[in-house]
Image 1 (cartoon, each protein chain N blue to C red):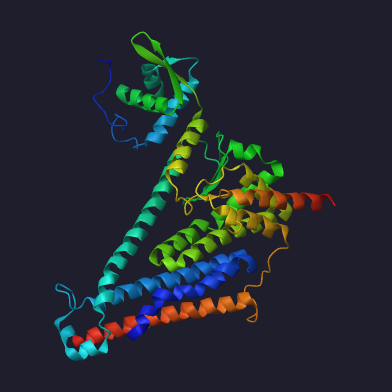
Image 2 (cartoon, rainbow over the protein chains, first blue to last red):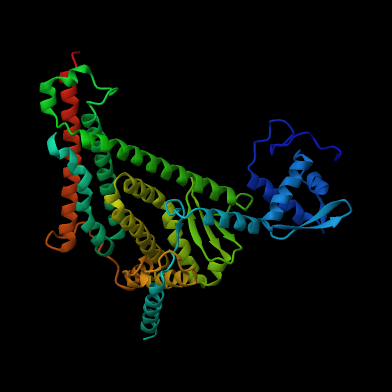
Length: 140
Length: 310
């Protein structure tokens, strides 16, 4: 199989217990950052080497596949494997993850206090009128 | 303890008038604090009484943990023995516990997920995410918390309006508004009669942040414009299809309040006004609720004490 890959299927770094366990999100961000530092499409092995964090090859491929599913990377065939390219930057990835949090929770008000709540249809005209009044008063 | 043990279950109704009036007539900071305190006391009293009703009412059921002396006829006479209410109290209490547990669990889960989503970004307080959906959130954390805002939201606001938005969100974080909101949510789970208070507390927290932002940027009209613009670009909510018949939602009321003169900072209005009356009604209801639950607890404990041959 792929040479050098340690038989470690978990997402923990393979190099002993000194490094703290990192969440999926952080690994995804790291992989994306590594892809960004490349000058073009690169292989998963290149990413693994670049990260230099003892991640197993299979773990890197798993993370890349997950990023692909989120639309955060693109890939193209290169011989028997794929070459990968970033489609979004780390901020874009954070946006994708945040969107998932927001979509997943209908009842998130107690945690994330939103600047505005959604406007029911009737409120839109009322709001426009209020703002219109405010504008015309300011001009007087 | 008598019939008074049932009072705290319905006394939250006395807080309805103030929940309705405080939003418009009280200083939002005072309103948020007052309503949260009232909601917490009423919720705790109500839950305590539910537990007492269960203990007393289920005394006849096999396997209850009460001492044997409890079945003494004299003891029986001293406490109301309502088997039906006692049995109803069991599922009610379980429902309260489950609902509160779920609320807490979801709260911590959303918080964890949101923090995780932002990992890998520079550790600035304001996190700008490239997203076509306009949103802005205050995300509390143990340190100073973060403000999450999408590029779509920023592009619809000018420089001054953005400052108003950041000042608003920073107030949420500095004043720990998520604690008020969580307390309100838990209270509404403990007793459904407290739901109007939850809405009122959420609205007061927003008004509090609006007023603080207005003081920071020194222009109430500017904050009103920022709130209005942000609401107009945000997605309409699909759930409220009958809203055309309903009273205006929170956003127009916030904008209108900002276009009017600042609220009176006096915390206690005179008794003769409607809001004063509502305030005293809520205060009386809360006190009565706390007293009757305390009284019922003391009564039950002393009866149990007397019935136990120790």
